[in-house]
Length: 112
Length: 107
Image (cartoon, rainbow over all chains, first blue to last red; front, top):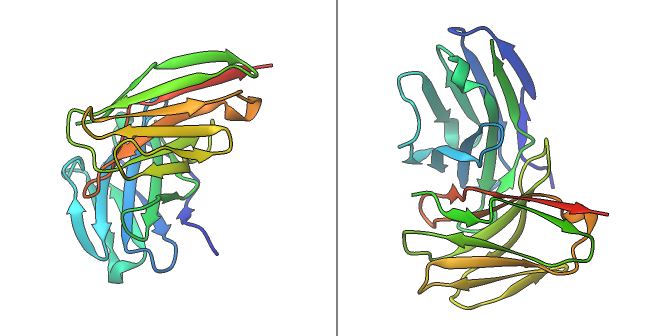
């Protein structure tokens, strides 16, 4: 069974530039999560989708971050414009319901 | 509200035991435990659904006390491969992770 796919794995940008991350969850998984993990900290939930609807986005900085999940499958997370403090690993995870979360390898963002 | 884990960090010798605690200020209906190795994504260890229930994974087990809103992870006879950061995860609606516990096992 294919796992959660994320791209790109690494991205380096200048502050005020934009960046987009893509996630393809495990087939059939209704719930998709985007987490931000800053070095040395735990994953922080940015947004949680159930199919293509948003369950929670209370921690998403909506002035610069946006996310969508088209047709309840793939998802993209965009940052525009990026700030230095956005440097982090962006983890995508999916789950079939209320059980185990399956994580992708993450996208490491460095903002200079 | 993010669950608080204790201790923040622990160093063990191979073969020693450790306990990691996870406390929530909100009611817990289920608790998950994950281990994350450096540079890798978190990997699921186990889920606990009922109060007082214990589950096991290799020589790792956990308990869940709904009343106290706490869960504990027990690592028995630790191995070098147990090194990493352990996170509890909670929430049936909005899924959040605890503060994390860094565990290092020395030979």
